[in-house]
Image 1 (cartoon, rainbow, N blue to C red):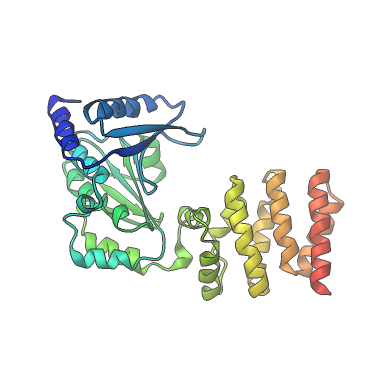
Image 2 (spheres, rainbow, N blue to C red):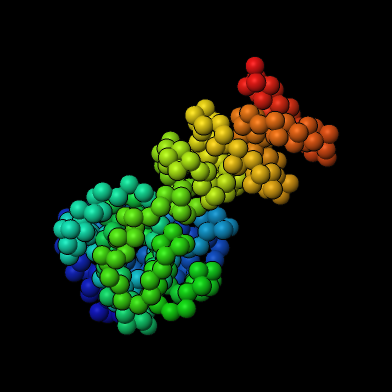
Length: 324
């Protein structure tokens, strides 16, 4: 950290009205040390900032989290420091500079939007784009923003096929490279088809207890969103539970619609762990499909664990009750 950056943080801290808490996700990844050193310097220079350490999982990347909707896989120094400090400031300061028309639009957003912004400290355009994007999570709770340093986390950039910076990715479907027209980005954010929501956006809705809202969208579209099947077989139990709640609601309100998940789930059945098999079988039992009964009988006579066979038996019993 340069002397100028230290002075910038010290002056910013002096203008704070209250204390601020951020979270540091630490993993066995050696890059955790770089983020940790930044946080140590930040709290030394800005005593009003406290850092809560979190232990990340094996699949997690080191991160600095600002609230629930802004995440940095980056060390925000250089030209990235000012927008980072602004993101920590009061709500009024966070959104200062955004036109009122954009604020009004964001206030009407009802669908979650997952944004990933790829930057690098050597990029001359990134410092212009970052301040445009970082206020958005402060305006709408439906926007989740992750800022990623391509140099520090090149594997993430490779996964998203990022060729240059800055690159903004929305829901794995839309992307912008270079200088941004924020109005254009928000038009896409506002006008998306719910059926094209990303897995992460749907997962977020489930984890926030909005399974019924997902149900309403799928019933309205008369379609089980293809990405939703991935949540039914998700490794996290809480996500699968939310998906099961949604499937059960659909089974009650539109049983024919539930039939759309039978084949995709059956394709995944032999490739998932037994607890996930049990959850799939629970949904099969709610499907009311005679086609499912044949699959369940095949499980009872197949090479499966006693627990899976018991779940298949219960699903068959549920099917029989539905037919009565």
